[in-house]
Amino acid sequence: MKVLTPKRIAEITKGELVGNNDNCNAPVTGAVRDNRDVKQGNLFLCIRGARADGHKYANKAFDSGAACCLAEEKIPDAKGPYVIVDSTLEAVKSLGEYYRSLFNIPVIGITGSVGKTTAKELISAVLSAKLCVLKTEMNMNNELGVPLTLLSLNEQHEAAVIEMGISDFGEMSRLAKMVRPDIFIITKIGYAHIEELGDLQGVLRAKTEAFEYMKPAGIAILNGDDELLKEYDPKMRKLTFGLNEHNDTRAINVHAGETDNVSFEIICDTGRFPVKIPAYGSHLATLAPAAVITGQLLGLTNEEICRGFMSYSPVEGRSNIFKTEGITIIDDCYNANPNSVKAALLSISDLSGRRVAVLGDMLNLGEHSEKMHREIGTSAVQCGVDALFCQGESARFIYDGYISAGGQQAQYYLYMDELIEDIPNQIKNGDVILVKASRGMQFEKILPVISCLTP
Image 1 (cartoon, rainbow, N blue to C red):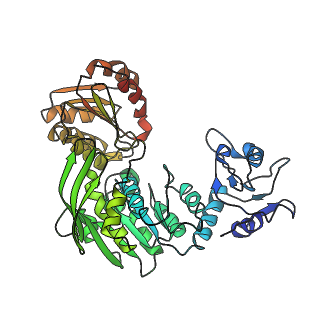
Image 2: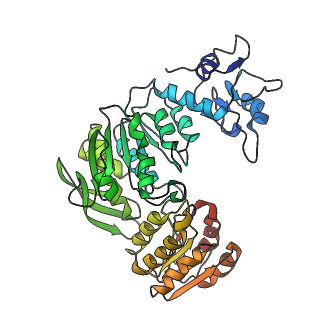
């Protein structure tokens, strides 16, 4: 058992330990930032947020079984030991880095402008056919979520799959310093966070900071269909995946079975075999070869890999399908950037019925925003979208692009209330409806309105 104690936490973080000798050597397992999530023996992080100050909930955390708190100030009448540090966030990163160093298991890091969460879920599903796998949960892919995930490691785990999300230069270095991936996967160099990163070369530079924190024996698994990644030299073993013939592992003969499954064949150095994934979206076939490579590197047979794919299910808000009477809804509300929206539009082009896209602003595009929103409108026409409904300040350019490219039925709404009020009048029996926008647009509010309709 890899054991942390309040005393050891103070040493690692160079903090001030407050408590008596009886409770400063108690074992600490796992860490949480919300006192409602505390389990017996957890470390509770006192973090000041926009709406709440975690220091005020420290004693509630102790009441729920926390073994220790990490704080930036004294906790009045503390019911347990705690460590005072200058920055709780910086301290938990130090803990995550230290704790990761205690485990000699394969750690897979995943990033990309689009598809990283889907790739994480596919790879975790595949590896779980044979191994006990720790994976990033929900949106825990940032400088707080990553160390919390690492602190969840235990001796039963045989592999870890860590999603690593960034928005600016230097972030990937800080994440990789903690994760120290043995295998690092990049799904796509695209336009997410282009406002901060400048251009695609900037995105490439930011994502590839991770390679500085890998051992010489590390392996890079890169999307060979992406021109920048195809040419990139990580200075270590490089394997490519995708759909095109030049990749080391690729998918061919992709067939999307409406909303229920996608099937294809994998071609790799061990031969050729069929794969079926019980989920919606032809985009799964573009990422599945990365999971195949990872599984093979970790000793899985092709049969085990196929069995793992059959256990895959998408996370909430990522191409989730639900059906009401006469309507199919594709919930892809979690986030959006130009690459992911185009992929979503391409996927609905495989479906029968009237194809409807309900789209909102893609944020953080800076000076590229107008052009890229217009391109989405054009793509909607090219993908056979029959009706388009847009909301948001920038989404009017999606509308303009759609109309300019020959789209026939479209409505634009500046405000969410206008869209919610009108959308019931626009939906018809048999519609397939894609709902997608950047997370800040809160398009999940639309889903209950649509799901209650019976056209």
